[in-house]
Length: 378
Ligand code: GDP
Ligand code: MN
View 1: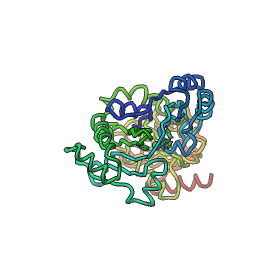
View 2 (view 1 turned 90 degrees about the vertical axis):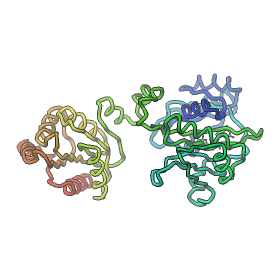
View 3 (view 1 turned 120 degrees about the vertical axis):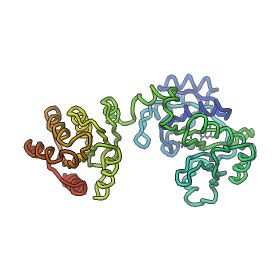
View 4 (view 1 turned 135 degrees about the vertical axis):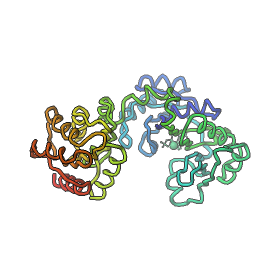
């Protein structure tokens, strides 16, 4: 789970990394009052769980409390890469002398952590990494040894950061390990004209496997409003659903099968509209809930149900589909592929229902091809 910037900076502060003073608000009047408390001027920053806010117009300098209110009004409600801005953070502005990039990331390929750091931080770090890879240092960190003072100095030196940045590197490692994070990133870490080292932005991705001991961010944050209305609806119904941006709706049983189905649909030249794993329960209610969420996605042109019957037999899934049709009006073509336990019985249940919008396929490839063709023709 990604934290918001204001939550990430809270963790930084708790671990001794200096951050500018800031307040989070959700309306213009509160932004005005917050700017007053911060001394008048303020940087107004969209709080969304995605990067590139600066380039999208989501980070703006306000010269006084009235300007802060206007700027907050502009940024609130803005959409940044599909995320609606619900709150803004007002931060005390600082005078920047230099911007650095520092992060720790779990590198699954090499099976260790990497310190990634650069003296060319700021909004163009992606471009720097792409065009001048030598300007971005990547140094393995042995998790058993961690980032000692010596290691921190080594990372700073290799990356070309000033020696005063080294303590931040050790503290940021503490954030990663003590807070169960998989990624911590500060961009920019700045040196101010007064020579102070401050974290001006922060990204922290927590390891969901440790959510049980991180209830502080759980509850309200994970069960709270999703960024996507369909995801909120699906979450409310207890479905394991992720919205994607294609046109073929997908329902399957088992995360592995659903992911393979996404790949096979993509291989047929179509784009999956979602991930939906109905798991072991193929009850009529789950099927109806899943179908209704997927059919209400305006981008969906065809739906593919791909089930391999195991403990949940195919006839139960077919019954679930037939019963779901009593509560959900099928408005788009549905391709069903049933295989495995009781597949023949399942297929004949669907055959006898003889719905004009339902067709069956016997293999996953055939099913994906049909769904892709139907979506394309729609
Ligand atoms: P991002 O675009 O989502 O990464 O948002 P950031 O929080 O990193 O802000 C983008 C850019 O705004 C930073 O790289 C800084 O150059 C600039 N910025 C942010 N806060 C301040 C500030 O207090 N003073 C100044 N001068 N610039 C700031
Ligand atoms: Mn940033």
